[in-house]
Length: 248
Image 1 (cartoon, rainbow, N blue to C red):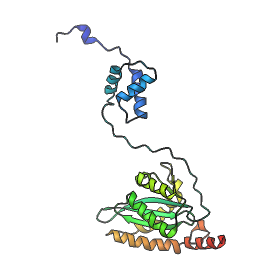
Image 2 (cartoon, helix red, strand yellow):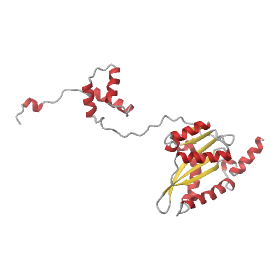
Image 3 (cartoon, rainbow, N blue to C red):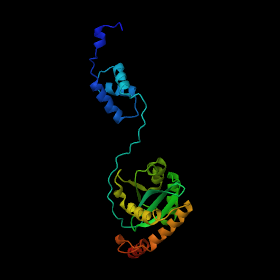
Image 4 (tube, helix red, strand yellow):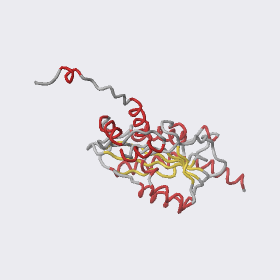
């Protein structure tokens, strides 16, 4: 090939391990920033690597290829799951999923009052975005009153700016559970289990209207006829009636 032996056997003596470690650290912490910004940050730290070297290593690490990154959640504080002393102090919300016989997916939004475990709403539809969640809550507030706080998971409907801004405007505090800790929302999780066993897993649905009718009937039975051990054997409605009398 008409090249010298020394050129053929030459191997680079450059040690870029420090540059690689620094770029890995920066790209992990700031995934949306690019090479120019990393260069400025590195120079501010007092490291005198020139731009060409940083750019070369940056490209070798394929950091110049745009990466799809997940939106990172802020750190969630653990809020103890305690039973409130009055109704409308704390509500819990959660989503469930199922499907019709046609294979079409449906979603169900469950809302309950933590004080007496009363089912406030079971909303079923093929799509339940944040705007629909807000509309459902506004309907509940019209007849039930406003809660002080709502306990939810980190689903996109609950972390959206639409939902958080609405809660802020209403003076409602949002209590997010920690990711991967569903029992921090244990009241609604226990409710979901009963609803799935007695409705979603017990019937086959041809149409969405069947889900809505059966859910309404089940919720009426749950609130008025089903006793709860946590409520001293009373139903949710009987429990709240008894406590209203005591408080008066």
